[in-house]
Image (tube, rainbow, N blue to C red; front, side, top):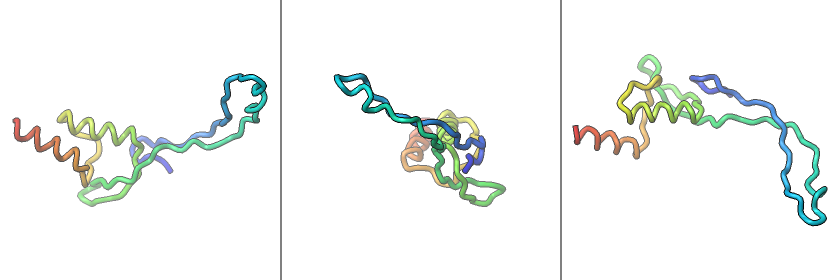
Length: 98
């Protein structure tokens, strides 16, 4: 899967165990490095596309950027359909003080 906005996808890498040298244990964790796939942290989110609610997957970096833009008063690059309760509370506090 890819991120809907930035097209971030997984990459191949190698995983291996780490172990500090202890008495008699130097070769204990000496294992071959195995190939693995690192997945991006994708979250299912409902956004508005041409007035319609659509479910897409966004990486957490893009989601964080949207939430930061909202709290700073900027227009985010995507419109979220439902906001978390914590973020709604922040919007209410800002509107009361203004």
